[in-house]
Image (tube, rainbow, N blue to C red; front, side, top):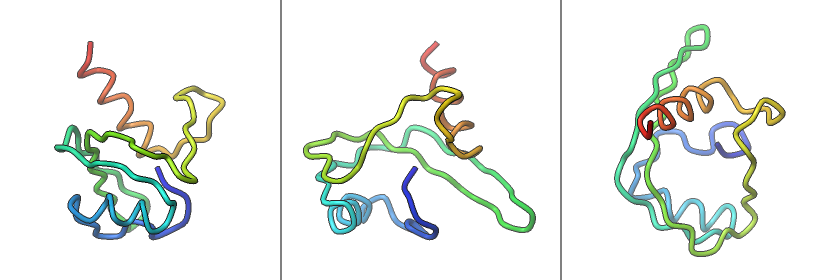
Length: 88
């Protein structure tokens, strides 16, 4: 989940690494898709695609735990649950 509205509107997976480098100074190799989540807020539909990735340099990105204290969005929490369930 990235800060700022519209950071990744209609972004192809092939462009994601470049966008992360330009916006956050991060070097991340984007791998294959691992999950897809659909979420609706009023009349807006969100399609969230998660990909495997290898972080080479995190730049200005920061990592946060998946717990109740971190204010993750509902779509991000749905994605985390799906990925954790798939590993079980």
